[in-house]
Image (cartoon, rainbow over all chains, first blue to last red; front, top):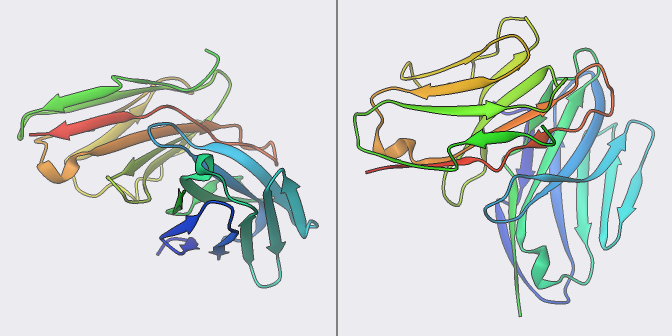
Length: 112
Length: 115
């Protein structure tokens, strides 16, 4: 069973609307969590990193939250743009060996 | 190199043939991951290398799949007797474990099409 589960698997939103992606993990001991963006035909690129002590972090219109107690993270996209169409991947690092565990990703499609 | 390099970028092969995919990680990155991404699907873990430790092969889907890595350099993923269901993009990523905010850097992937 994957230690990082993402939902929904995919979603479609209209340009200008907001959306929230979820990531639940069982990775332990926890070190940090990153959200990656993967544009079509390209490799994933890091958007933001969350450490144990951080609850929220923003990168432009992207805001990530982390609840280390419930082992949940979310990525909120505000005022979506067509360029936000991509897959968003949640990656969690263990603190003992720093092995990375990857979620399967959420595919976001923004329509005009 | 400046980034993770994968080759070839595209590969079309006939069913039943063997293929070899290559990944050049970023210099100094001791951790290397192979993932598979079928069309419209998420990432599927295949194998993880960390330095000289035994690789984590738990994600390899069958014994037709194998991967090697010499030291902390190039890795090759070999698929024997390819099947149509092997068609996917194969992504490689590398990182520096021990650096607690280590970021995984991905290659552009190899798109494999089995006809």
